[in-house]
Image 1: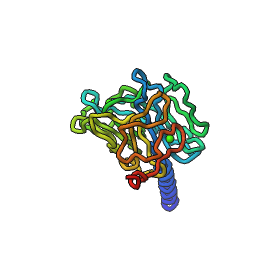
Image 2: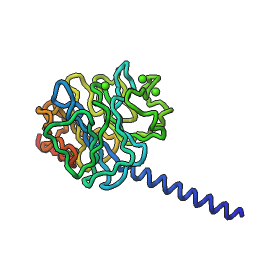
Image 3: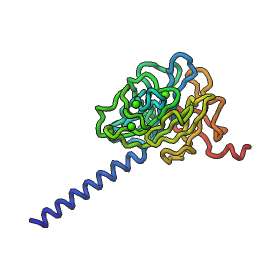
Image 4: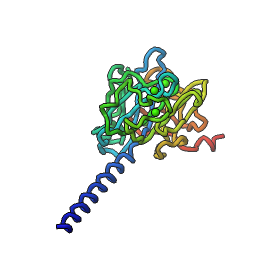
Length: 257
Ligand SMILES: [Ca+2]
Ligand SMILES: [Ca+2]
Ligand SMILES: [Ca+2]
Ligand SMILES: [Ca+2]
């Protein structure tokens, strides 16, 4: 009897470990890949998108979210934009593309090889902002306008039990703004915050500043061209690839100088 119980406990533990490893294995392969936050239009953001990369055909574990979290004083921790990716299958090119359901981007066609997810959020936040992939066992607590940092200490409050997966952030002044969930702060400054950012293809380290290049986006709204000011590491072949695998040769710029 004791032996049976022991072997039952062992089986359950092995199964639990397997499920845990499998789940973390899948989420370990999910990365933020590309993001266009500020489109050239001065009045709306019709061509915003968020691209997430993973294994082609893999299903995102339940309760996995993309969050745009405000980092500015007075709004520390507020969710500006949310998309639930749980249960979504990566397209055959390994991407999921999140767009807003309310504001179509005229003239832009997303490839059939990506999976489109529509968010009811209207636009990601401007200024100091964190763009985070995270999971939480409390999905009902996550919605646009929720304050993930009620005590404004720059840490995601424990009650949300968020596990960050990957993320980037930018700030005008990090001494007055917050960056959440360990996101890589890829830009600080008051001149021009980046309009968009792209992960170098194949550089899949999470929360890693040097995996990213960024810049302004040139008009028109559906443009895929970056413009100045660009990041110092901007590759000669850098451009936006909404819903498609990224381009940009890492460190190429150094041999050009
Ligand atoms: Ca903001
Ligand atoms: Ca707050
Ligand atoms: Ca907090
Ligand atoms: Ca892309």
